[in-house]
Image (tube, rainbow, N blue to C red; front, top):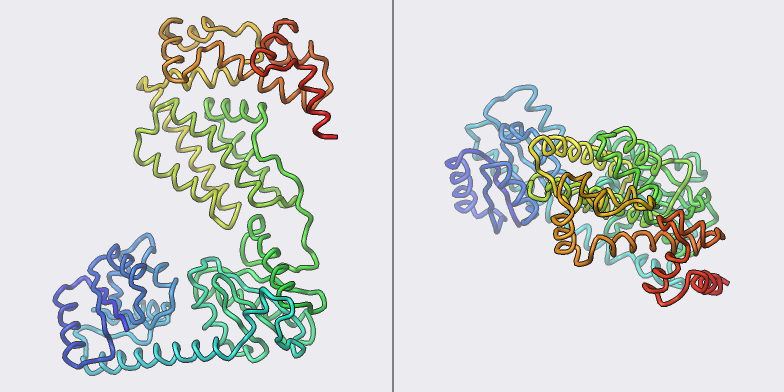
Length: 491
């Protein structure tokens, strides 16, 4: 059994260690933490079953990181304070501590509560072990004809926590509820599968709302519940349907009750930015237009339409790529704090369970990047190649665009820009410009019935014959043949 002592006083920690060793309490390993950072580290690494916590140290943590770390795993908490104040007693209660001891610590009381905590840990372990051994529901999650009787139940539902690390804590908490006799709970790795003998859906929903409300009140976190409101099917079928229903959290957030019967149909969502959207982002970032960025991102989280979460995540990474290039343009990759924020946002886009939170962080990051750009413009910190790429993205459809126009815009010579472009991109300015125009032309050939001459003009070629020549030189096929090939592929 593991114990973590969290106290600023080294002498206090050493004394408690000696006391535990001298009285041979049922504790095998003792960890010490004198700072918030060390406490969080040991909580994450060691997952101690018993914790002695000095409240004064906890109150110094303005970020609440330690309190969040304490809430993740179930444990037996004994709080300690130097000041027997009402606010400290309230804090101990909110943490659901076994007791609040006042310094100097009464060693007899300490021994009494450590012994009690040890017994609690052992009882909890034995109860959980026998519970899992006695129930055979788990194979039925994966095998349709697994023999388990569910005739006694009327409804099946699933609960998930805002923080999956709290799942075990949630399982034990659910079993302690006054109406838990109406339910049978099966803990999974990230969720709780539940069966109810409630006679009607309204009664079950009422209890579900109560569960969500009480969990938020005592754990400062949120739950979602998905209810299988069709006639009872195989456990495997219900399990898969409930998991799909809980995926609605991505656009709906937490504190929700989802019904399998009301699952929406996901609409198609284009993963990548269109050329017009790329231009919008380039201009918005350059002009510090925070409102345009907010409008674009909030439109993605439109609650009236549901999209596959993975499609939205890919779309957001496409937007982030535009922001990244803007960062490189102003050499922000050399600012450590901005790079850290970029990495965190990228990870959030890929993994965070709620879209709205991602959007909020994305907007804040864009505002930070735009402010950094203003500062760096004033100090002449600018990447000419990335500036050139942005300019090409906006004006490549203009047939008059050439190296001289671009060099004049950037305020450098054509020879210097040509050298920078070739050494950085590995191709000439003209090659890059033609590739950009041809990529757009291929899209129009594939998706529209516009005449070749109009596509040439639309993509920056003022001569259709020259366009066809360049197209065939790059792809060994004429624009007309390419369009026919694409049409056959679709048919």
